[in-house]
Length: 389
Image (cartoon, rainbow, N blue to C red):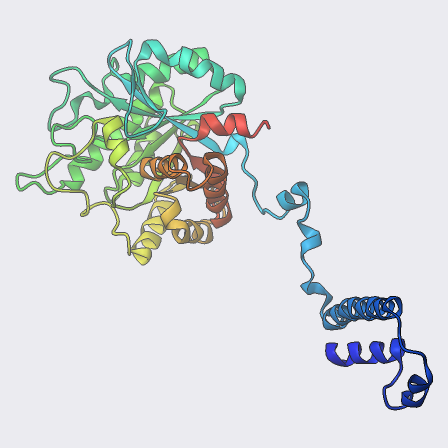
């Protein structure tokens, strides 16, 4: 029965048919205002009943279309997520300098600092107390003469990363330490490897140097080494050297497998002092449109022995995170919500476009929904508070 038919039928029941009751109506006394109001009220109730009945009729054949009851409550809404953000999923990036007393705010990276070794423990203490489980370390050498064409200082035992690894291991033995492995912070030219005379990347020499640095970080006590250079074959080279050193069984190899070139790294380069002095990184980082190339890179790194695959950036590459999970069904997938993503969220919140907390969670939930189970995020300190409330 249609809605209009149902209303008409109920109206006739209430007031009678105009045809069959015409004579009776003619014999009635003129209606009072009260009786007119009563009849209008009856018709209104009839229409309301008809509307409810019509709705019931419309859904009676497909009750599964009624979804609101499954997420009307905040707890019920949380149950709809396949993955929920937890503290153990978060890795917090730290920029460690070679000046012990540094605590320098990075203007383009709101709330983030370059930290000297002398500041690391006091900085981490409250975060560990709140539930921080993991950090990833980036070296930021400031001392004159530290940088050269071969990134000689990258594995200096007195350099910022190795000193920080040892210090953190002693003070916070429960904290899982990842060490980013790249040469760009230590090369005089700012590129992620050793260059040929014509300025192009020498992949063979770069891989040999990067794998040495990875082993040095692992021997210093890093639980995880994470090569971010995107040179071909570096995962296999690192894995083989870890095996040769007898430490592969206690060193996680997390590969930046799908790291894309683009516009979102500016604040990081300010923090790490790693901007290239000429050219760009488009010949070794992936092109933004290269989905198939990313899949090949992920497949390659899995075959070479990666224990975790990472996609970077995160928010603009959710399809690649999904691909990584599909290709690496049995491997954890990490995503790096990079400095530009973080800065944009802060800028939007400052402009009143959205709430900072709400957008931070929404962006993280999108990353988890795509398939990641680990997020490298500058929002980690805030999440440690927000997840308690």
